Length: 315
Image (cartoon, rainbow, N blue to C red):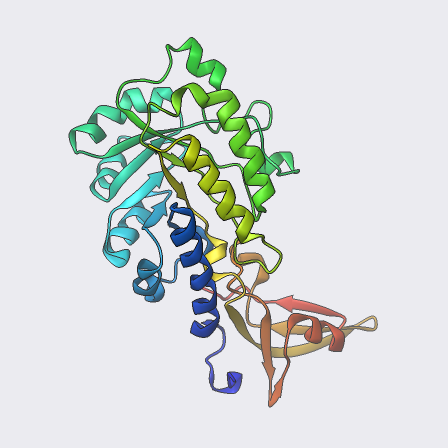
């Protein structure tokens, strides 16, 4: 039992027992499906647990020069890197820290692909399979006019898959279930099937929330095994973020003041919900201290106070 009164406030607190539970699920998927599972840092970049994550994954993915450097220095291996655009200013450092690099467009590959290939880095191309279960257009990477990934039609008009591309990458899921991945793979085979026997790896992006209580891991494993049977030469790569640290910790805070106005009582906390990463399942629920009073969750805080007001002081 965690004694929250002995924990500094504010802080993120991760329970290694809960993390071990999630890692056992990830290991099972890796072992029984034959797919590689790598860690996406944006959900949890707590590098103090990187040595543990490294033992229960096949690497890590980065989306910037800073993340790629973090993977190399703290995860202990080069990154699988994807960013929507690379520049002359950051490509050198990114290549220094990467074993795989995915380009968002044919233009980006033409501009920087040779540099990567000369360093022995495996190059991939992000594709748009024209399917995503994401309902909000702002976050849907396959919405009409999307800037993310190459469509099959564009690839065809540009002469097909360029020499030097060893992998394809799609990212269309968000905290999704195995049935959504099934539909995504069907779309990939429908639009890009002619290229699957020419490449070495297929990166299925993130959004595979396999540690959620309602996720069907048996179905995920069967789906990946069936896909591998149809394409036995392919390395299959998944890069979940939230799944690794989903519901493994707490955001510890202190009620610093209580104000009342118009019949509304507001608890003033020393944390900011607005500053929390959108993907981080690790920082939920909230434990708040006020004097000697310990509340067990955000809902219990809300039951005592009409509203919560938070201070922007989390670094």
